[in-house]
Length: 134
View 1: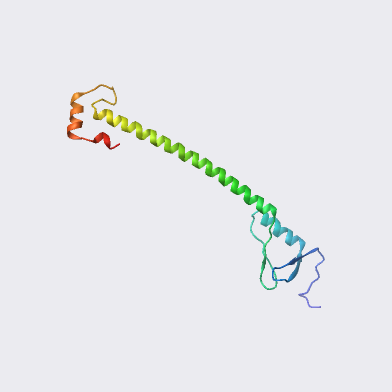
View 2: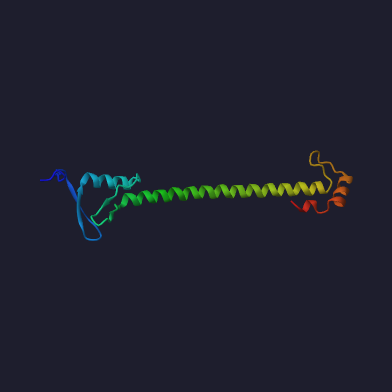
């Protein structure tokens, strides 16, 4: 018997390729391939003699994908809430800025809240419409 032909004493698993070829592989290799596939640890590829890859499938892989979708959905909802909050905050700031500009255009000091006729006259004469550009 040639040296390159050896006997394998371990358990074998028979796989059938979509092309119809049956192939016996060590059960430990197939178990490791399935485990790594389900745990997303990188693929171990087993090929049929014609070069077709055996790809494991199963419920655990589907469950992992569903958990990932659920996590991403929750993250999206959190980001959308934060976006809405930021939009409301920006809208409030714009309103406060507009109110302040209108008060200044009307001659009211933003610090002491006193009214100054010459400021009102200056703003309406030299900067008409300034408070409109909020």
